[in-house]
Amino acid sequence: MLDPDYFRRPTLQVAHDLIGKLLVRGEPGGYRWGRLVELEAYLGPDDRASHAAHGVTARTRVMYGPPGRAYVYLVYGLHHCLNFVTCEEGVPHAILVRALDPGPGVGRCAGPGLLCRALDVDLTMNGSPLTPPSLFLVDDGVTPDQVVQTPRIGVAYAGAWALRPWRFCLPSPHLSRPLRIGAGAGSG
DNA sequence: GGCACGATTGCT
DNA sequence: GCAATCGTGCCT
Image 1 (spheres, rainbow, N blue to C red):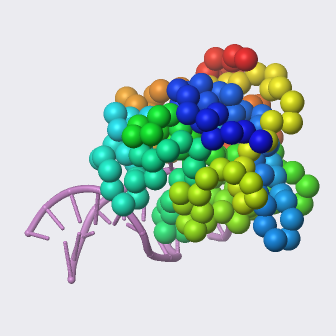
Image 2 (tube, rainbow, N blue to C red):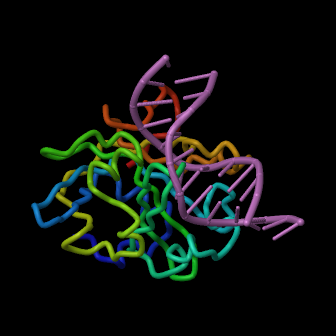
């Protein structure tokens, strides 16, 4: 399992390193999981695409807390989105989980809303530590061939910040949006 | 108290 | 292309 201190590092480094790790959801019925193939880093408060761009509010309070916790919010009144809080306490950084390669019996996870539906993640998990048994991360030793970075999805309102290549992907048929040839730079 | 809009998704 | 649907942030 990835220790909470794993998240207490520079956010872009954490996002890169998390690609390929397993996200595990534990419930009374058993465990379900998927492999992280698409993540986005949000580096508030300077990052205009971040919810923390307007400082501490009731919603963003979790991002200002200790790293290694879940930040869950509702978008469009319909869908939940799951984030991991990163960096030092007091720095409102977070990593949005956008897609998983689904494990056994797990439904479609190509998109932040679908993923939360597939793993039964909702607002009740906001602020929860990323530790067993409910929600945690595991390194199964499988190293990604490459990590591709592209601009983030759905943040055009953020102006120049929308152009930052802070979406991290492992090439997969389960991405929320396909990678375009020539987009981003491979590494790792 | 009221209003505009959103880190999305699925149907036309 | 667009409706669904409601919490949040910001204004009065």
